[in-house]
Amino acid sequence: MAYYELVPAYGRDYKTAEEVKAAFAVGADFEGDYQMGFKLVNKQQIPKGSTVNLRYQKLTQIAQVKV
Image 1 (cartoon, rainbow, N blue to C red):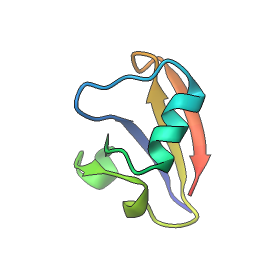
Image 2: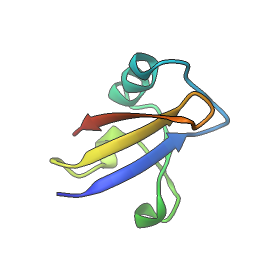
Image 3: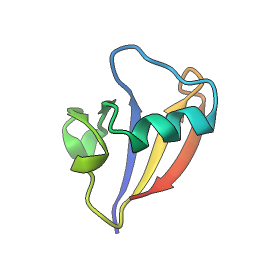
Image 4: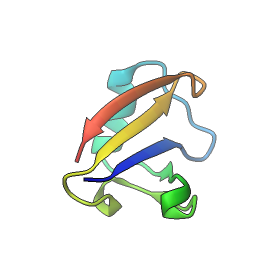
C-alpha cells in the first residue's frame, strides 16, 4: 500500500476537508509529491488501494482519502 501527499494545482485552495475531497473525487488536478516527480496528477492516476493526504486551507490542514 502506498501513501501520497498532494497539494492543489494552479494556485487553488480549499477551505474545508469536504471541498478538497470533492475536488479530488471529480478528477481535479493536484501536484504530486516526490514519488510522482512533482507532476500534476488526478485521482485516476493514483494506484488503487493507496492512501492520499490532500492538503488544504493554505496547506496547513490534511484530509485523508483512500483510492
